Image 1: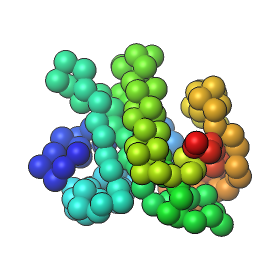
Image 2: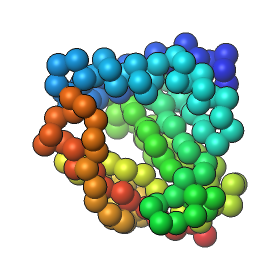
Image 3: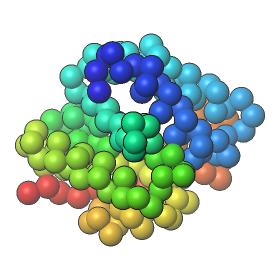
Length: 168
């Protein structure tokens, strides 16, 4: 996505994230997170950064999902230049089950391979068994566990898994 797509990107990011994860936040937390992570200034800065890429998925000219990649990011202790991180991928709930997530993941892996990366990795909430199962079926393995520290994010949901696989 390019800078001219800023408003479209802002809308799909906020809609897809909110529809999937609003219930993960205590009062006021979601609004703060959306402003910090998907605010137009943050997105504008991201779009100008050559090591960050956003993608959107469309069905009948409607944006239904998005993905964010860091092209220079690796698992803790490894060289950032050798890895690509799938930072975010969210699909509007009404469009899940249509293989959109698989198509975006395939695009992310292709991007990592084009950029000659060795490791492809992501983080997922440890209670999100549906996503973990999807990633495991795709070949991801558990690397490590940690806890996130976002204000007003529900305590019982702060457990995270780092998952990865090595690219050829």
